[in-house]
Amino acid sequence: MKMIVPWPALLVIGFCGLPTAVTIARAEKIPALLPIPEELSASQHSNLAQRQQALSAELARFQTAAAAFNAKSADNQSDSEYNAVQAQRDRYITAAKAYNEDLAATLQAARTIKGMNALAQTLGWSAGQQTRLARALDKLGFDGDLEATSDKISRTWNDVLARGASGDLEWEASQGEGVGFSGAGTQTVNQDCAIFALANATGQPYGVVAARATKLIHEGDWRPPAERDDPQKVIEKHGLNGGEVVMLAEAFGQAEVVPSRDFARVIREGRPVLVNVVPANGHVDSGHEVVLTRTFQHGGETWFAMMDSNQGPDRRLYLSSRELNTMLQENGVAYRAEPGSTPTLLR
Image 1: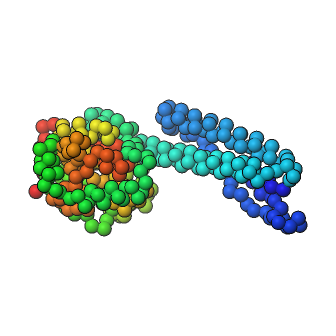
Image 2: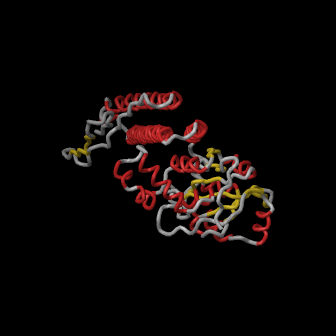
Image 3: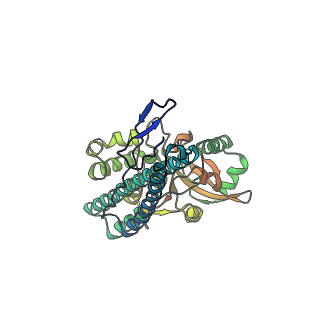
């Protein structure tokens, strides 16, 4: 006789082969759904509550099916029915884990945003800066192709890197719109691509951006104490998170988080866009910060010129909007200098 485990604490008990042989195997626990903290926004709370309600209904359906199966005698139990109910259990466990992970990530993001807004106030940022920062942080989110696989991303990067700067592309890019200047240097083995990207976008020297980044990480409360005590290690070993990129961009000028559909528009306005992409190795759990500096038309499609710190200060990569969408991970951060100020461009 086979038995479906409808609750976390029970064991699977079933006969295996000989009538006298009993196999007892511990089933994977059905995770409890985490409660929704009150500190989340109304929209976040509503979205999570809807998911929680749907999951609770799904769990109830599984438990009903499991109880019906377990109530049958061994002669009336079929392998196909057993496998179907177990698959239902597995689907629920996968969905419940995803919900708990998303809730934890949402809560961490909310606490990070709260800490950044509080630090901006402590540092005496103007009301305009604080408003822009809060608005930008609230807009951070996923962008790009949800269906893009690691292999597809790697192939896309290979195409972009192999393409280089052909004569036609370089000429078409020069006829496009946006900004153009030399970069801050070449990234080595450290995870400091975001510092290079910010230096490239703002026109500030690498050391100036790095110093400001270490100050923000040290004075903020969104990272663990060990990381706040050694911000340089954070930059070199882990890199910056999206909120830190936004806050640093605002520290040097004005930052706005924009979706990919608006990249070409804001670049035409003279604002470079910092974007987080999957790195060339295709590791979708990692990120690499680059800067889009120009936009142009090629073959009837919108293309971009991209500054990548792995390629050095002078080389540009050229990629189509379709290729960018494949490797893109998040909304972009459009940067502009404060009106009336002149950024110090690197030469």
